[in-house]
Length: 211
Ligand SMILES: Nc1ncnc2c1ncn2[C@@H]1O[C@H](COP(=O)(O)OP(=O)(O)OP(=O)(O)O)[C@@H](O)[C@H]1O
Ligand SMILES: [Mg+2]
Image (cartoon, rainbow, N blue to C red):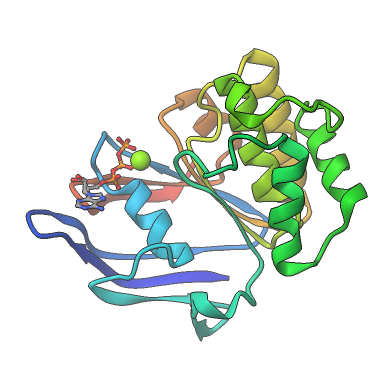
């Protein structure tokens, strides 16, 4: 279980999150909705430690979260992930997989196929279309079979088939007990996928509950 307790994030001129308390349970897809600038991405970044909160805490499985330990198994797709543009998709994922050494080449190749990318395509990522980049980002997030998956507008740039495939994939992961947090502007994705939805407005929760 992931819990955030009275999370606050202040920037010089903005209070991006204001006393946000939430819990995210296993086997559920938790939707984050709200207008541009309402705090969805900041919340995801605090959840994974890409940003430090001004106040408040993130707890995972009953312990305060320490992002530096790399122990928690978390898959992240937030904004455009950084890839080495001159290298192929496969090479990029192999480099990333080497950081933890948790999975091997065949699992990386298999993940690429599962998101509709050809692992033998030698095209450098610089020549990828927007949707291909997005698929590579999704592959990067799921390849180590994380317990917690944080996705920021994952269907952005995907074609119809890509959207369908991603939905099927997420429902499969939910069925396997993963914790999935999904920020999205797609009402359809939210309606079809989410068990619980939280709406943010100017960094505050204005609504949170079962769909
Ligand atoms: N690094 C930063 N420095 C200063 N302000 C920031 C930073 N990151 C986010 N903010 C501010 O925090 C607020 C929330 O931004 P956030 O990116 O979380 O919005 P969002 O809900 O994800 O919006 P969108 O739907 O456009 O993706 C905004 O006012 C934004 O300008
Ligand atoms: Mg955002």
